[in-house]
Amino acid sequence: MALSLVAQSDLIGVAPRRLGRDSLAALGLVPLDLGLDLPNLSLCLAWHPRFDADASHRWLRAQVRDVIRGSITQGEP
Image 1 (cartoon, rainbow, N blue to C red):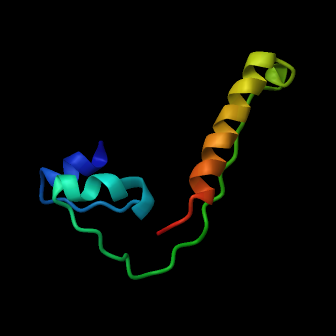
Image 2: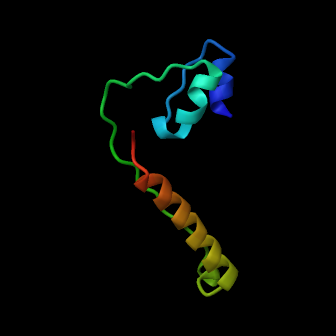
Image 3: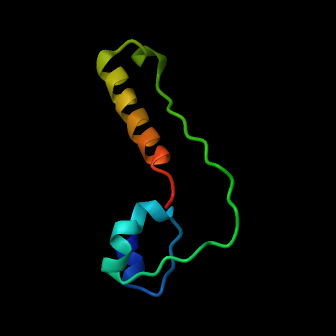
């Protein structure tokens, strides 16, 4: 995990605050504001057209979309 690497070194890390919120205190890390506005990130899925109708592949794509949407809608503290 990247936060563990940062905690055991003199490195710094940049990540969405919500990803590490639960682990920061346990690792002795202190969250700081980045100090600048970053643009929104666009995410997309890509697959070979032969998998368009494949039931297993459709299920997997739906799971990935749900996880991504869930992490986005949780929002920042």
